[in-house]
Image (cartoon, rainbow, N blue to C red; front, top):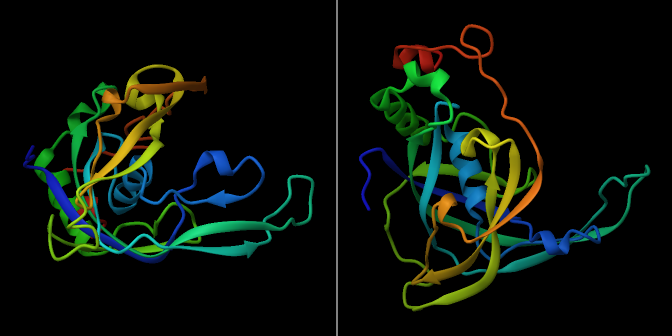
Length: 238
């Protein structure tokens, strides 16, 4: 489906770590072979985000072959000092992302800020500038870079591969300000890549959902911790 407020971008980096939660119990971290919905959403929010809307990730195209590399690290121990762990990263990654934004209907107090043209133009300019904030591929040590791009555009490593299944994977978190419930939830899905393209289900379409713990949405108060800006220059701080 085509959306008139869609953005397409290219994101790449030397390494990525989309942590499989099953491998973190013993202090190790092992990356999923492909990005999670939540990780891509975090990239888009680093490029441009306001609580007025939420990003919906449509598709991700894997351009480079999936390769891993393990490194020994010394993370801080909960009881003080350091411990030794092994983290397994993806190396030399590059993706094309297609996404669009939708109004957050659980934020009726921000209705005056629902100016689609304004937010789309700012998002487009922020993609051209590489994002408003630092962009990461899963974790802080995996610096990423964002550029405008088409979808699909150019050759990919899996263009001739009909289907690759990755089994049950973490999809993302359902936050209270996005669901209207005072509850944090985790979503799972069966990830399948067709000719290098991951087509994500919408959050409400995920079949496997787990309740984590009670949580309330952060309030945004105009004039206190949120401002309604009427022009692109004001939004971009020019």
